[in-house]
Length: 70
View 1 (spheres, one colour):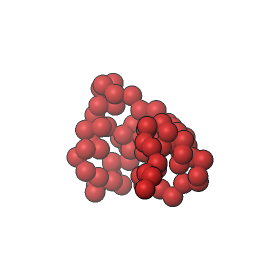
View 2 (cartoon, helix red, strand yellow):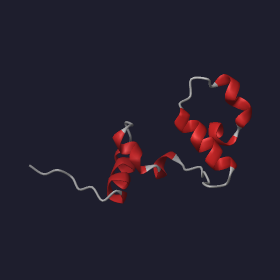
View 3 (cartoon, rainbow, N blue to C red):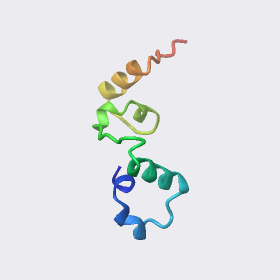
View 4 (cartoon, rainbow, N blue to C red):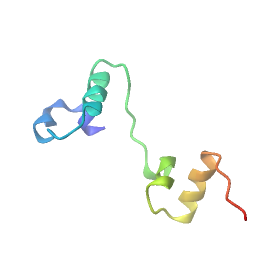
């Protein structure tokens, strides 16, 4: 969010991909709006982070994923 909304940091981020430049332009032209979300509301974290059981189960439920039963 910070990089997309703050063009002053471009000198530090020469390695950033073109996708981020596209997002920055989209924010600048008000085509998209970025919102901050707490970690426990970012349900895709269940695929990328080691979460506590409750946060994991809330994310799984929100994505409508069911536990595997053998």
